[in-house]
Image 1: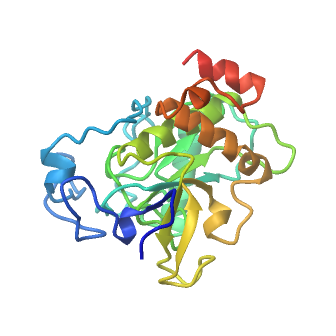
Image 2: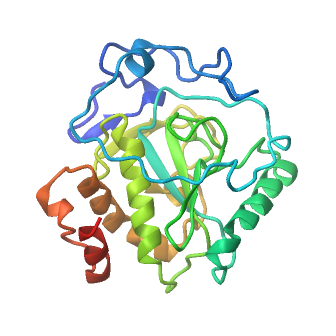
Length: 278
């Protein structure tokens, strides 16, 4: 059945790319130059040809796993891939907010140990993490520019990326403007790789009965959604969840979707000023 107007069907449930449909939702093959991480097969639409979309956002600076000193012996040696990223889920790490940004690599290593050893997720669940100073960190291994399947939103990990704000953002907690802008920039870039409008709707299919939707159920989401939209949780906290409409507008502006969005219309004054100087 055709998706309703304004709704994009996610790659995990059959969306096609320019050059023809991709028949697999997840694949593994070969090896990257980095040992123990499996590469996607060279489908022409993804690798052999450069796909030029009209609303491509620039790739923001991302601190690599090597730079924050991830112990690669702790994780599952294989990365798993979807056809592409059609939606982003926003999280918070539910850790203290009073950290020094210089200490974030240590926080990441602690989260990494907890999620691999204690939760047995095989790696960090989030694809990316963002601190209050606006620094973006690579989370799950497999390539920041690739559609790596994480463990961030049960039932909706395929065809999505998980971005975690480092901290706890319950009701009344200020969300730093630098953090908001970094989340918007990262989401704008990841979604632009498939020409997804950050203010649009997407349709995803649940893969797990423990999500908000029974396995096999198709549901509509914002292209930038909160963890709570797909799973019964308070994440990403009331304060950050309330900022998602502004983050969507900012991300659309960074993709050049409209002059109104690019000018920061609809954003609070502090975010508008930050947005204009980028």
